[in-house]
Image 1 (cartoon, rainbow, N blue to C red):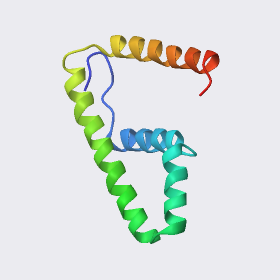
Image 2: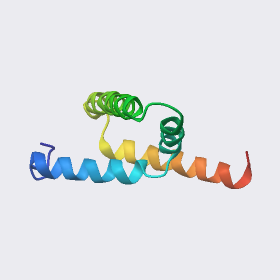
Image 3: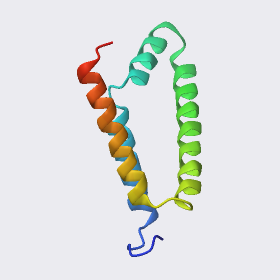
Image 4: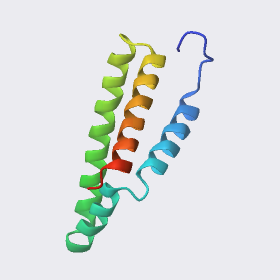
Length: 97
C-alpha cells in the first residue's frame, strides 16, 4: 500500500496489468518477430519460449521497480520518463532512420 492511496485488491491489479501489457504489446516488433518465428518453427516451442521470456522480463521489471520506488519518488520517475519520451519523439521527427 502506498501512502495516500487506497489499498487495491489483487484482482484489480491483475486486470490492470493484464490490460496494460496486452495493449502495449499488441502489434509491436516482438509480436511481429514471434509471428515470423512461429511460421518457421514449432508453434508450441515458440509459445512456451515467448511466455517464459516475457515472464522473466516482466519479473525483472517488477523487482527493479520495487527497488527504484524505495529510493526515488513516483513523480520524479514520471517526469523524467516523460522527458525521455519527448526527446525520442523529437528525435524521430527530425532524424529519420
